Amino acid sequence: MDSLPEPTPLGPIIPSLVADLRSSLKGSELLAPGSDQYESQLRRWSDMSIKRAGAILLPTSNADISSTLLFAQSHSLDFAVCGGGHATSGASSSDGGIVIDLSSMRSVTVDHASKTLTAQGGCVWADVDAAAEEHGLATVGGTVNHTGIGGLTLGGGYGWLSGEYGLTVDNLLSVEIVLADGRVVTSSPTENDDLFWAVRGAGQSFGVVTSFTYCCYEQKNPVFAGSLGFPPPAIPAVLDFANKSLESGKGQAGCILVFAVAPPPISQPMMLAVVFYNGPEDEARAFYKPLFDLEPLMDTTAMIPYSSLNSIFNAASGYGGRKSTKGSTFDLPMRTEFALSIFNRFSDFVTDLPDASGSIILFEFFHMGKICETSNRAMAFANRDFYENVMALPKWYDEGNDQRCRQWARDMVAVFEEEMVKARTEGRTAKKMEGVGAYVNYDGEAPSGSGERGRSIFGANYERLIELKRKWDPKNVFSKSHVLAPQLHAWDGGASATATA
Image 1: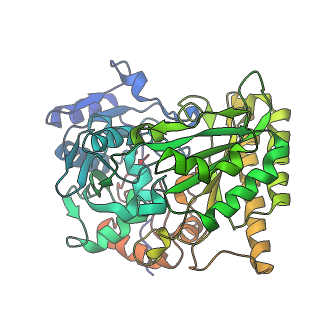
Image 2: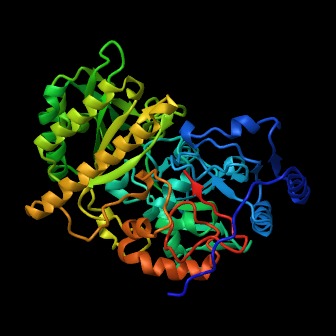
Image 3: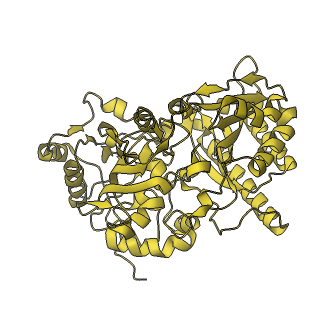
């Protein structure tokens, strides 16, 4: 594989170039330091990801995104693309460069007859859920509704409806994308289908997606959902239920177990079981009876509109504070001894460092049958298998604790990876489909230049992605999300960018 030229250094935008760019725009707003809204548009989900951009574009058209991409490349300017701003890697921010902030592009249209929904790239899931509900519909979206639809979709997208309908990316019908050369193209199974293959899992590395069209499903009934809180002695029984629920349950049920510090007056580490059932309340309560029989310390379960479901985690996952995310996977059934050891590690961490008491470890228990009906080679996304995802999310406030908290997340992931190896060695693995065991949306680390991260995320799809990068983004303009190969660097004025959740 031939190497590309060495990258041209990318720099900040100077005031005279801000004026030049502003004069070239056809209706979009360009903010500079000192402008109204400038400070508020810097906000990110993690305070660690805030950088002071030299200019912030609030586009209202593909044309202005296209001209800005070409402008940044012609002047060797750094740039980033921001959707919901959830990436803890900092990929949605630029230190002195240009940020293309899609938050002014949040229109959603629903075609009830065809059961499809088209949303602009700046939408968050709350926009999509509300618009679909007006038509008695829903689609597979994120479990936190202030997450941007772009990052979650392009990285795969697990959600409460995945047990019935698969991943968000499985329900993606087409995209409109602005490429590095300024072209605006539609990509779908029948138009630019090779690009569509790449977009579904690695879309941040190929362009700025400004429109997503999804298939929807009838969702006229409310759903049963809420949180149950348990003290540490109940962990074995709660885990036993979660393990067995995937054996006996259906795709309409799902559960996320969370290690967290309980709010006052408890203020101690505990386990939360966030439960979901897409059906009548009596069926749901019968399904979750083993958990109710444990007499939880807290119970917020109720029948709620589907549009409210993805707000359950909002209070614990709001903006503000310093955050990092690291993800891994775990085999089923999860061993009780292993779960207790993880809880003890979590408890020690938040007890020894009260600044990090807002941290959580999150274990997903979703039915993978529908997801695994699709091959890992059908699209770039390659994490399909009969295991589950886990995420370590430290949250803290003191900058002096940055290294300690980020290292804790890395250490927790290493423990899960060791357990996966042990499970396979002992022949008790659920792995059947050669999934890579890495969900990119839970990996909040900035990419390195080695290409190993790309290989770990995309597995057997990696080489084809490199080929498609050479076709659709040969200068590797979009490289802030995943570095796909050491041979592919931003170069020749190629700015580096990604769209993030």
